[in-house]
Image 1 (cartoon, rainbow, N blue to C red):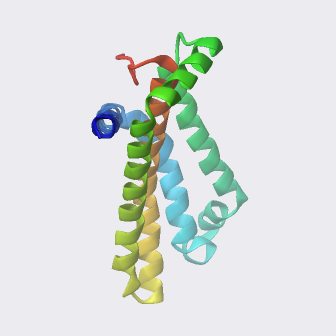
Image 2: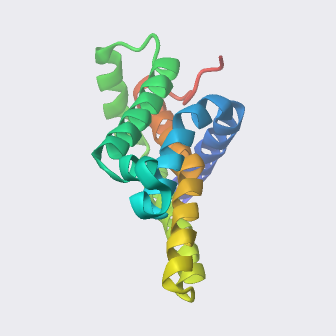
Length: 176
């Protein structure tokens, strides 16, 4: 029981550290996420029929590829910022040791991710369930735009921090 309590504490601590990092670096994160949020808003909010040619591009393959490229760019920035000085051998050994020693933290983190997913998806689903089709589509467009500026990049930050902790020792995000 004490092991699980420690794991929950570690998971919550890392979650909090991800929140602090997210807030401290939000300007950079938003630079990667704002175009993706706009793409989702335009694509889901009506595409070409509502937003003309820009909506058609956003709803098409170019919009999707742009969103993927931006997310990969954010991950590359996070990894570049946080994985300096870790060799592959150290990363492999660190990951193996981490997985063996932190099962309760892993379970608690999975629980946090599931809880976050349920809240982030169930609450908006309930809110939009009583809306007519047009309002529902508009609500969903705003929901996805907001998630692209908040939830999705936060989870990326959290996962990179988690991975950094797993391969690089106890410090998830060295200060800089």
